[in-house]
Image 1 (cartoon, helix red, strand yellow):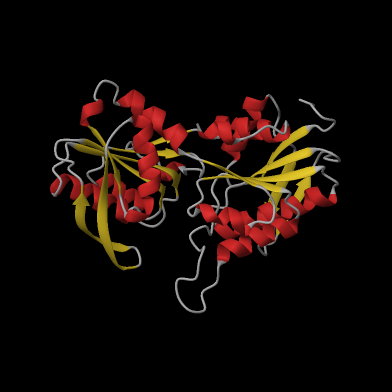
Image 2: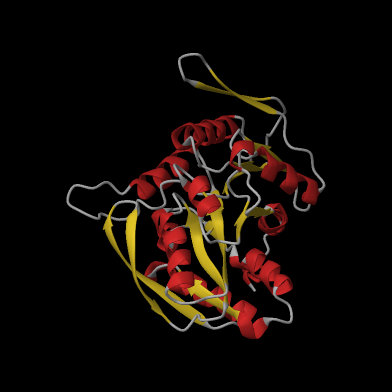
Amino acid sequence: MNLHGKDIKIFTANSNKAVAADIAKDLGLPVGASEVVTFSDGEISVSIKESVRGSDVFVVQSTSYPVNDNLMELLIMIDAFKRASAGRITAVIPYFGYARQDRKAKARDPISAKLCADLLTTAGADRVLTMDLHAPQIQGFFNIPVDHLLGVPILAPYFIEKFEGQNEDVMVVSPDLGSVTRARNFAARIEAPLAIVDKRRQRANVCEVMNIIGNVEGKRVILVDDMIDTAGTLCNAAKAIIEIGGAKEVSACATHGVLSGPAIERIQDSVLKEVVLLDTIALPEEKRIDKIKMLKVGPVFAEAIARIYEDKPVSPLFI
């Protein structure tokens, strides 16, 4: 694959090797030879084992748990490519950590998402390719180009096929007011009506469901969000939709399965019939349960990388 004088190379650190392998396979390329290890004192060491001089390098790394280790691996790897005279370096970050720290919620708060953007730029990244930032305006934190892919075009076809012929019974629900735009776009794709769960959060990671805006009685409900962290909001919303709204069944989907703390136990014990996630974050074996289904993002990222490399627009992937 050599269209304008540079070859394309796909590298990965340790956070999500499966997605990097999927991307490379779809592009008909091998994953670049490299080694990322941690010394006994916690320092990270990177070795690039092939020439990247003049190459268009794409580094695949989600900054998920352990967030700081994965972020440092990415930064050090980018620096290594810069010092090895790579032609262009693109940080491919399926899940962008620290994205929820995008504003000052109270006095003297940091804006950590902006700091991460500055670190990536300073390390030597020429552009960023990511998916479903928690706050889309984070793109403006970067002084380099950011291509922002969406998870809905991958998730929606799954549910269109699943509920084929049952469209009148299906309803999309946003688990909170912050996810309404995403849920509305999802509902438009599968041609289903939209409802909203109105909740009031009393303290961090604890929420109380107050009301359901819309009639979900007798419906097959799909809860749509950008990420599932501790799953408290999601499971409370699902419970309210069944007990208060009278829905027939509830499924859920999200782009990022952070699944921290008691998330797996909550999902397992909840009324949720199925939770569909994208593999932007690798799911450890111990967290795999029958209720969780994973869909691959590799083909979409591979198409985006091919378009970036060929200087073609990425926007057709959003249609």
